[in-house]
Amino acid sequence: MKISATSQVPLFFLLLLLSLVTSQNPSNSYQQFFECLARYSPPSASSISQVLYTPQNASYDSVLYSSIRNLRYATSTTPKPLAIVTPMQDSQIQTLIYCSKKHEIQMRIRGGGHDYEGLSYVSKVPFVLLDMIYYRSIYVDAVAATAWVQSGATLGQLYYSIAEKSSTLAFPGGVWYTVGVTGLISGGGYGHLRRKYGLAADNVIDARLIDVNGRILDRQTMGEDLFWAIRGGGASSFGVILSWKLKLVYVPEIITTFQVDKTLEQNGSEIFYKWQLIAPKLPKDVDLRASALPQWKNIPNPQIGTVLNSGNRSNEAEKTVSIQFIGTFLGPRDKFIALMSESFPELGLKLEDCREVSNIQVLLLSSLFSPYDSPTELLSRASPTIAFKAKSAFVETPISRDDLNGLWQLLLQTNPPTSLIRFTSYGGMMDEIPESAIPFPHRAGTLYMVYMRVSTDGDVAKSLRWIRNLYKYVIPYMNPIQTAYVNYNDLDLGVNNQYGPTSYEQASKWGRKYFKRNLDRLVAVKSMVDPENFFRHEQSIPPLQI
Image (cartoon, rainbow, N blue to C red):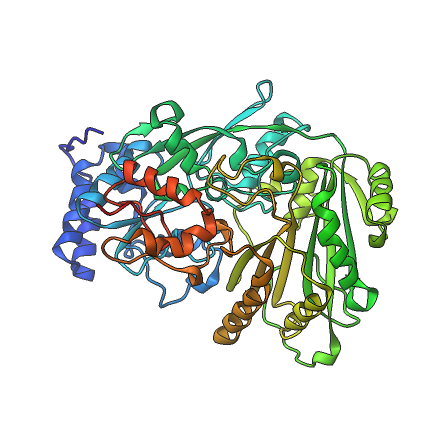
């Protein structure tokens, strides 16, 4: 990218810089960084000053907190960026990359903000935040069954745009409306269509990004290695995604949703044991998940997905575990009930447990709206937020009946509704796609993924001990690598160095768990496209050290 200095710098921007320098007394490097932004920013309306916020700006806090989804990283002691840039033009991103690299200021990139460890908007070293919130235009071509979506769009915005054009086209992404499209694709991205069509990242056919040198590249110009890496390997390790081209898939007009709740007293543990054996082998049209959570006896459970908070009762004799079997079937309910009566009679699925809806109604339901609400609800970026810690695991061997009882006892150590374990079945298309097709390697041989979450609103240390013990309990049923899902990033697995290089051996501690053998190719791509490791965070892919 050719960077040219502008002859005029907006007065507002100069005053902003002066305010920053005098109030915070930054080092000379920081002052030079802001001078660089002013010098190389395009003039007039496209100036970076129009989209830059510093702590002295009245809107700084509202912009910073607008997309923080884990309140563990929204405290008074959480490190904040030197500045936030919310670009509206590619040139503004190019300028920020150039000046950040020139003056050795770390840059974090945020889309939807569903970053479990806050890596997209928090750093212990001085940094600037590139917030892609205004990159959210979407173009759907219903005839070609494709869509171009900018990197700052949310799943809700994407799903709404698709539904406007067709009731039988869909994208196999996640199930929560405020999740960012780019963050989802960057780690793989699963939803209720995974067993039919694979992951979100499996259905990306092109992309545009800005690399460390400021070049704007598409699939053809970036090459297949880099295109492979950004689809599941953590795109923020390699550049700034501008947009994705997605392959849309077919869904029927009628989809069946269902939910069956069973407590331990209702034989829920035995039914779950059977679920482990049956769910991964069901036809591809079936998505059958399970969730387990503590419940006060004689008090109905909230809808699955309800935000967790701190419980206020403690009598364990009053608690039980509720296991909720939920999901979708791509077809009418009478056909689904017949299938389940034959394949999984223990579940006892009945007509009243099922509801026939459209695909957009499935997404409204999964986002805790009514299926009869307007699809425009999905356009909102507002979302319930909590303070939490989460972990993930991929299970390859069914958990024994005895160990399931121990698992439920661990859940009963917490109060409703502070904890949750979600089990996502694999099989179907997930078994058919090779481990090396994209960086996401968790394919054939995986029975299901476990997602564990606990609220940290109360005693944080106690909550962290609990979830770490829960994770250890599941380890014997994982593969020897103890694999995890990168989109549920977990710093307990290991971190890179804050300053200086990170060795391959050090990164392997966490990288193998996320990517298995695909880590080697990711490191090779990183070494080729960003050898000086500009795009970095605590669990970014490091280049090889020569």
